[in-house]
Image 1 (tube, rainbow, N blue to C red):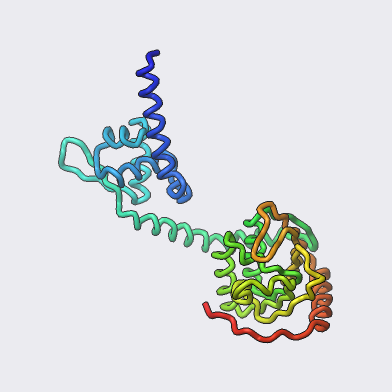
Image 2: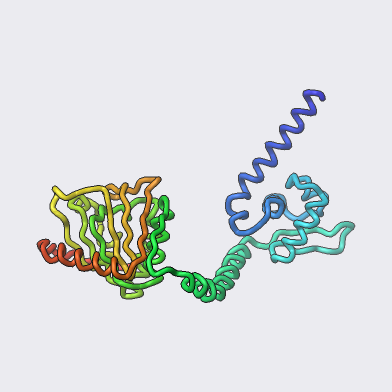
Length: 277
């Protein structure tokens, strides 16, 4: 094959890749297929056109483009214009994408009670499982919010101030306040240097350990759960943090008693008013 042909194929592939890079991350996350994402993005970029034209612009085979356009019509993201030699398809205003998100949220809200019923029906009296990474920390925070019970934190270094967690910790603090959860925290001494520490962590009362007891581990107790993990630093969380989650009513109660014992031995801290959300 000629070099010119190879260059043409390369150019086409690069253009296709460009379209995927531009449309793929968000549109695919919203549930569009790769072809739907490329066609919708091309319609936004170039305006309305017939299937033949838009399939060329989106680098989607015409036969596949027909099927994808039909699915976009069903989702309400594209509409048809009649009257010319060829049916023209136009992209609906992008705000429609938000409606898709809300529709999925509504569907999930209706399904959640049944999902939770199935989930809790299979629960064992005691169990231990593991979460990994930043999302693992979010998972147990989400479970704490679902329960809505007070949380007892020990050895916390303010890792919740990690930038990768901040948007969720802000949400956690708001929801905890709304649900009237109390966050009782015993922080490591070095966490004192973190600005707005009570606000970030949602703490309603807190004390600090003596400096000689600082370490890089954290323990949280809420409901029937005991959660512990290592790999924390003031305002930071390791990428590969391993979160150990223990579900045991008796163990959780024991840890709360030990926590209270330590709390009672620590000196009182000067109250600092938390910021409102």
